[in-house]
Image (cartoon, rainbow, N blue to C red; front, side):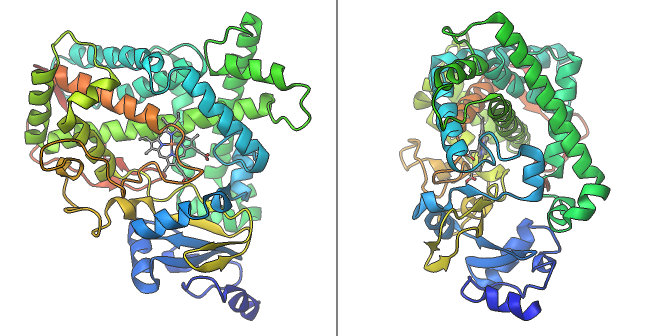
Length: 472
Ligand code: HEM
């Protein structure tokens, strides 16, 4: 078996020696973290191979390899791996981990529905402004006292998605809402953990022994039954023909396509798509906003500069909208630098080649997994002047105008890139501006140092912290 595996590994990009059953995950100690991926790239190059059991995983490192790998034959690398755990959690439905016709139809429909609901225009802006307002009220009530901003931020960001998919928001005290967030947290905590990788390899044992897997499956069932309840109440309201939210649009779509033979629009795909929008859109954006406020504590001079620009350009009563970013180049650059420097996604959700293809000169058979290291593009020393420094100048030209950067791949690239990029940027910009316009954020008395190290997980989060929001 050992020799068979060595023979099979020939022709793939270089990498640590694979062994039967465990593959070469031993080399990264069953965890693909920043250090192990860097070490692999240093040892084997910017394209190398890890073996997850008997399955080859091609790892891409650095801007050029990630960009070429994901975009040259974009469609060929647009599959998602179907593994034991992914099947348990999504069963091939929805958008995030589906494949083939289901993925194409659900993603296309999802983007279209989000646009019709106002992604990128005034429609969604109102929902975001409402949540920014509640967040401001939350901080105002604290009267400058030290507070952990995590839950109110998660609350604001989830409510934006809730308004889009369910057509209503939740109050901060709502028990169902807390349970939903806890359920999502349990699933997020499981992803990219050691126990996740071990569960993928030793599936028999994981089925019986892994408490984390059982918890993730239980949490997923909880969220799905909540979504089914929402669908039921939407059906009872019967708004077909005049949709107001994502579920309405989807019910309409099921009706329109019921006689089309290969249509994938059904209740199971609707539940999973709603789950995916919530999953993809909450944790990521909320974590980035938590980083945003933490960096403002760590870099008070940058906070002051943003406030100066906001004061100079906007009147205090102005309702901030996404269009304002064009008049606020420094603030826009700070928001982009927050996304770059926090680098919350280490690797893309693993891809899979859907047919035999070529990636950076290597012939890869159908079914090869592709893991693109997003973090390595955001810190690539060949593309960023001061990669390890929080420097809004990365997104400004010499005249202070905002500039986009090709190595800014926080939302990935190619056919499978994030479909919520515009919504995320709208949320980050509007909420960040509104908060900085209203408050000066400071560290609580006695706190001398701001800890900007991350806690490793599916997304990289800041350590819990407290801040004081002092009205300006
Ligand atoms: C700061 C915020 C966000 C970041 C950094 C982020 C990043 C990402 C990344 C790196 C991917 C993987 C792409 C790949 O496999 O190549 C992804 C996928 C995805 N994201 Fe986001 N995302 C954010 C916000 C959102 C929001 C607000 C939504 C929902 C509206 C969303 C929905 C999704 C979905 C559904 C996918 C799967 C796309 C597919 O498989 O076709 N994301 N995101």
